[in-house]
Length: 307
Image (cartoon, rainbow, N blue to C red; front, side, top):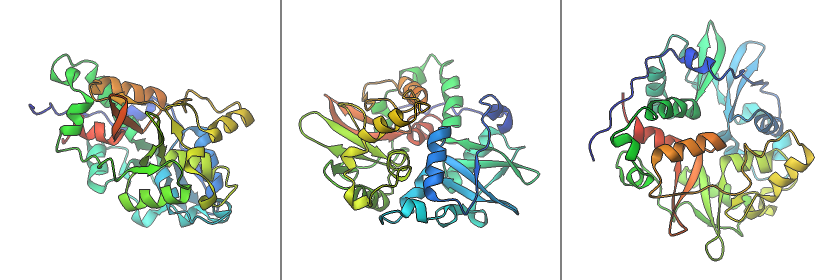
């Protein structure tokens, strides 16, 4: 396959982020993990900037919640400071950086959320979704090779390292504790859940944060992963309860049924779907059976491999 053209994102990063007009959501390091999870659900975000009296203390992301112990009440008893990336280990960029420089930095240090700092103040947090919006805008103007690329092309590209399906598969009867342990071992942000027939599910970091930590009602060993994941047959029980208890939670952000794409789906269409539904992971199917899971990061690497 011919090399893809390299998108040249020379726009200053704050100019790009200004279009979304999203405030920087902050939390104290002494706040509980459960409060952080509730805030992420409330504001539809996947990271929180952690600040104290001295200023920036760190950042907590959805992935950080995988460090939680499986004990009952761990979400309430664990402080944000115990899960976050502290400022001493945190990579930030100045507001003078272009989008391209930010992308280079995120790839170099392997992060999905990058704080943009101006005069020691966090002005924005650049996420994979922000980069994807820029890539999608560029792709809508393409009429050649890029417009025809499929998800199957992505899966066969050596530049994109997608996991073996066996490594990210788990019985739907397993517990959330089992699922979290598997995700840690495989360093994966999602797991496919096997059930009978053509039905299957997906459990992600976001499902854990929003459907488990935000409620923090039982030890993780006692929670069946099938009760908090999403399936091709319909919505998770936990999300339906969350919507019933709090009508401000918009189902457009968390679709009722699991969204999948086929190998023959154009990458541009897949990216449009993920952006529209706020998804970081989507299963890939062939003849209605799952063959892999791709992430927004995979698509970014595929469409804009290097600067």
